[in-house]
Length: 153
Image (cartoon, rainbow, N blue to C red; front, side):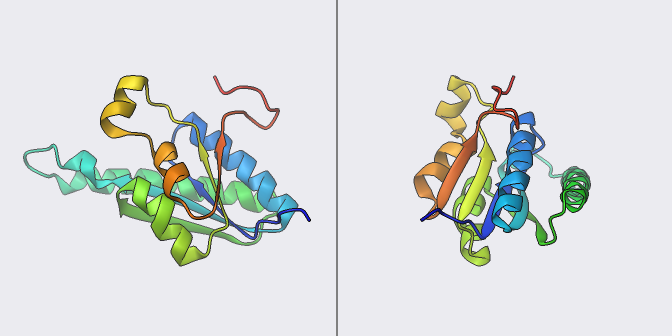
């Protein structure tokens, strides 16, 4: 019996790796006639280092994320997907992508791009993909190649 995925979560963070994961997720959703959930999590820890929090920084991040998610949703419509949901959250990307969204949305596959962090950054902050792989209760696909299965550069 082949595994059919019904609800696919793809994590969007604006990186090239995430875009490749998104494009592959669209293809997987089409093959499985699945719902696609596009999620972006604005990491609130990034704003804790500012001595005086400027709300306009968070507003700018939110607006940029909304624009990216809208563009991606338009792409999915052009590709023939009918069930697409956008989620924009503030908090810890690791926890929200690995646990909260999969639970609330009944996700059976998470797709995300391979980390763009170097070894030192992974030691200090860890990568979202590593955390999701360890903690998600559903299948996780870390995308390392584009639609032609060529390595992401």
